[in-house]
Image: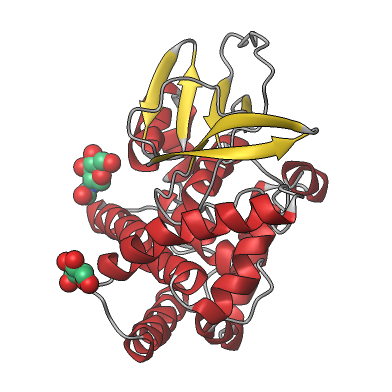
Length: 290
Ligand SMILES: *[C@@H]1O[C@H](CO)[C@@H](O)[C@H](O)[C@H]1NC(C)=O
Ligand SMILES: *[C@@H]1O[C@H](CO)[C@@H](O)[C@H](O)[C@H]1NC(C)=O
C-alpha cells in the first residue's frame, strides 16, 4: 500500500512517499530522507529491510523481521538491518525482504528457506534436537501456526482495539517527532491495518479474540512443558518463530489481554528470556534497538 503524504521536515515542505507497508504484523515506513547517496552493498552480507524508526522495545516491531534477524544472528551469518527504504525493489510492499549480492528474496517464510539452502551449516544447527520426521513435521506446522495464527492475534490488539492501539502505535512511531505528522501517519496506518487484521481473524469480536488467545497461549505453554526449547536442548526453526512472535507481546510493555495470559505462564516467560539470551548478547540486543 503506497500513500503519498506531505510532510514538513527541517522547515522544508517535502513530498514523501510513505510506504505504509502494513504487511504482516506490524507497521510502517516513512521515507523522510531526501538524501540520495548511493550505498555500497558489501559482498556476502545479508541486508534485511525493516521499517524505519526507532525500535524502543526490541530489535524490530515486526515478528517477521525479528525472525530473520534472529536466525542470522544465531547462525553467525554476516548481516545488516537496513531501514532506509532504499534497499531495493519491493514489489509486494511487505517486509521483510533481503538483499544478498544483488539477489532479492521476499517473505520471511521463503527467506528462512533460502538461508537454509545458501548457508550449509544452518539446517544441521537448527535440527540438533529434531529426532525424526514427526518432529520435523511438528516443527513445520508450529512455525506456520505461529506465523499465520499467533502473530495475527498480537497484531489484532495493536491495531484493532483502540484502547491498546493508542498506546502501542505511538511507541512504533517514536522516531517521528513532529506531532501532527505523527498523528497523520498513525491514522493512515490504522485505516489499512484495522481492516486487514480484523478480516484475517474472521471478524471475531474482542471477547472471541481473547478466548482464542488464552487457549493458544495455554497450548503453547503445554507444548513447551518443562523443556528448555520446543524440542529440548537446542533451538529449532519453530523456536525462532515462537520467540519472535511472543517477544512482540512480552517486550512491548503494554498489558493487552494476550500479554496477561502470557505473563501467567512462567514457563513461556522463561522461554522468551532464554531464547533471547541464547541468540543475542545484551549489547547486540541494545544495539539493534536503535
Ligand atoms: C518441512 O518443511 C520443509 C520445507 O521448509 C520440507 O522440505 C520438509 O519436507 C518438511 N518436513 C516435513 C516432515 O513435513
Ligand atoms: C470482514 O468484514 C468485512 C466488512 O465488514 C468483509 O469485507 C470481509 O470479507 C469480512 N471478512 C471475513 C473473513 O469474514
